[in-house]
Image 1 (cartoon, rainbow, N blue to C red):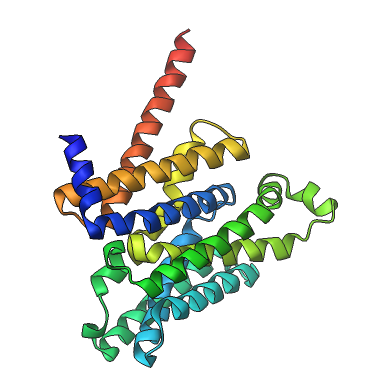
Image 2 (cartoon, one colour):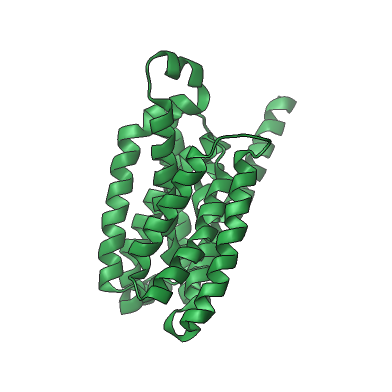
Amino acid sequence: MITDLLMALLDSPVMSAAIPPTLAIAIVTATISVMVLAHRLSFLTVGVSHSTLAGLGMAVLLGLPLLPAATLFAIAIALFLGMMPERRGIHEDASTGILFAGSMALGIILLPLAGTRQVDLFGLLFGDILTIGPAERSWLWGLGLLILIMAFLSFRSWWSLAFDPISAAAGGMPASALRLLLYGTIGLTTILCVKLAGIVLTAGFMILPASCAWFWCRSLLRLWLISTATAILGAMLGLVLSYACDWPTGPAIVLVLSGTFILSWGLAWLKQRVRRVN
């Protein structure tokens, strides 16, 4: 029965066309997920992803291409948060919450002014990879490749900054520039996820893969490998569930990843208990 379901999924032109971009997004987000977790930037991904609603609203209102306009807006928001100094008690989490709320409010106001018939609001909020067009596909491939290049060139430097910032700074590492590069890369990755997981669920897709891996290892390479494998498995199982149960693709994938996190947590706890008994 499972084999028949997989064959039917592959025979479906819409579903088979969605597999390559879904896997590409899974690999890219799993890669950045490691750094999001290492630098404790989970709330940043929530803020940037939700803030893109304002960028999308502006794009619709002005008749601009959605993804390019939203990309520029997400990068601007992420870099602004990275450059905002901690003064008078306004820390990064508070700044993120302020921008998150303000940008969401602006987007909610702008989209009705532009006419909601011009945009798939459900697709923006929760993702719809099945409706990806040729222009969006090209944009996502290019964006994904750019993110991976930046990540693999900066991975070890970001890792050092996360766990040993003093030694990194003493060694002459440009900490501020690398931090801004990381924030900008996270901004790009949120846009990559919007088509798959939507504005609401993008943060889950960028946090869960590395969170699952964190129970099993602490080395950079192993974290990346397990995070990537988790994201790919979650993406494929989510696509199968979406096809079999007629569920939205983005929520189905995030639901599978959430279940994987709970399973990893339970197995890690059980392993720890067995060690204590022995």
